[in-house]
Image 1 (cartoon, rainbow, N blue to C red):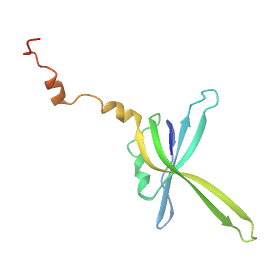
Image 2: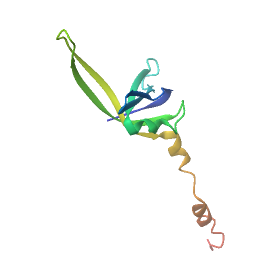
Image 3: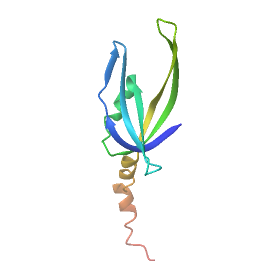
Length: 116
């Protein structure tokens, strides 16, 4: 599954326990401009660094997994929790920049000695 949209907020990495860390961010899904949706996605462990090269306002595509957990409190009440975990982020902005021709491509296209 994936979510596409504009990166609108990046939160700091939180060290939850000695061995577990997470980082959250918000994507604006603007499929319906009248009612945009703001979706919180979390990255865990080594994936928290995926946001380091991104900026607020970047158009991104996030590959996700939806996770669900069951929790029982001290009184025996059962609660269910869902989370959206990202595992890969593709920047639409960086993809645009990668489309510029390399030096060898521009040299090859400058074949002025062709007879036609």
